[in-house]
Image (tube, rainbow, N blue to C red):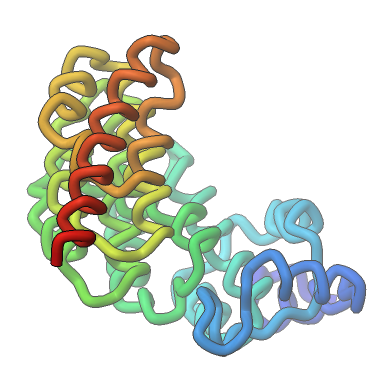
Length: 253
């Protein structure tokens, strides 16, 4: 049997792990019904741990074969594709030319990177690492996209920058996303603000001083998670005061 890391062989081996019980769990967990996050997604019921274990045999897969995986309607197949891309993006042995291929592949496949776990798998090392020493204008374009997955990509990609101690983009993109109406953006933005705050606490506090009163509550809760109790209470009180004022204004109308 050929050991070439092809898309077809990956799919065939993945099929052996399918489970109806796991499929039902995924459908509940990822909220795949009509109008939900993963509308149109198909699941075969393979645990993520099994996917990641299988991916180790396919790390050298070529971008053309990876793209074939990304075109699959099956969520677990696309998760495998993003995991392969992530591992190549993480490896210091990956040449710059391959990083560019993976970056371009991700950006032209954002309609297939269509759930929060897929974004979080691919964005940090495929997008973020590639852009670290380059102009990052594309992240601002993604942050203003109509696609929730592209907007999430914009903020999640900055996690690589944060690891290198560079938090500017995280705070600036978070400012763009303050008015976003999607809870997946609220969670991601708040979470990455929290992580940026571990590197620069004063920058986080200044951001919260300016926006805690008006930012979405979920975003705020994620952002303040690692602050001291008194600080958390202070910023929540700013938000509560704003909400109380809005309620009173609504009562008068």
